[in-house]
Image (cartoon, rainbow, N blue to C red):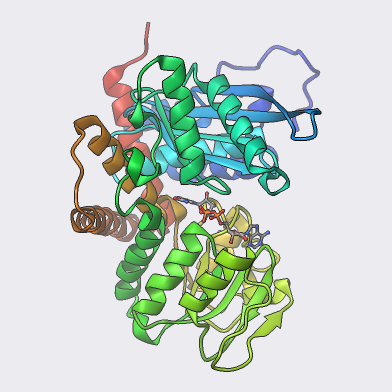
Length: 440
Ligand code: NAD
């Protein structure tokens, strides 16, 4: 923390406002460290780097709703637009009891980097509500979503900022968001959110896109390090949209999914979990807990033991800051593919690097979701919808090309894939900033 008394004038025009204080290792502090690591590689563009260290716009909203029992409840909501130099803001909305402004700021900044890394014409944004949606009825969830959408309606829009699903939000919530925004505008605006149901202008392939991207980028990375996917043992943390689909695709490609952890517990089977059966179990019971399969007993592990599981590929696909200095040393995988946003702390990154474990960073590994969101947005604007084959082919091409470019930059500068992705992405963002110039 700064020792300056409250209200003291900033020392320089570069001093960060207190709410952007980087001196803590929350997600925003981690993001700032990542920017510092990349700055030496930005050449003349580094004169603009301060613009990456503060969000363009951060909105905090009160979201009051009437509960089913007639009482009132207030929830805190956020929408942060980190950078719009390359296009409208784009990023998901998270409903979780631990959501904070710092977390949403970091997630919005990672969206700026991710969108630029795959060269989508978007800036970065993110939103969230500090709520445990599991405690709400369907009606309460709908009222919460609609009020939140109405509150952030002043800064979102098809050409301004386009939300999408994230942790604990789904197609139904996107449908309510689209409807609320449209009602307030007086016209159907399908392009205001992506990740919508197909019947409302959603895109084929969107639901599977992030997991498919994790798999595609993982395949590319595996080739570079001579890892045969068909022989690989895979451990996955988080078995929702991202982790569940990624596990399914790795298993379909012949890999053995040996361990899965979610909020309910950790399960392990050395000879391989039956992924389709596990997906059905989670659909029915809400968690991997209690899963049994015909081919023999499934072990339950203490949660902390997950990180030491014998595997070749580890996929964190749950929340931030899961791989830390406390557990990075135990990891046996040859490769970590970050399905989640921000799952690895900078110290853990260094430990994994020293151990020779390749980390495929979130900002490229999970970019498949926003890439198909981009396709959805384009389809909504043209009111012309593509086939699933078109979508998957274009998705795989974009991710492969982006990954190849990043691999090359990493080799050129002898830096990690994360720093290489930041070099590519931050250069694009700051080039756009420089070309646009400062207004006024
Ligand atoms: P989801 O809600 O579908 O699934 C989240 C999973 O994480 C669930 O299996 C849940 O049980 C598990 N989980 C929650 N807390 C946990 C804990 N403490 N320990 C272990 N597991 C825990 O969410 P999702 O959409 O799959 O998102 C997962 C991650 O991927 C998030 O970091 C999100 O930001 C990121 N992401 C999602 C998308 C997308 O399109 N959905 C795109 C890019 C990145």
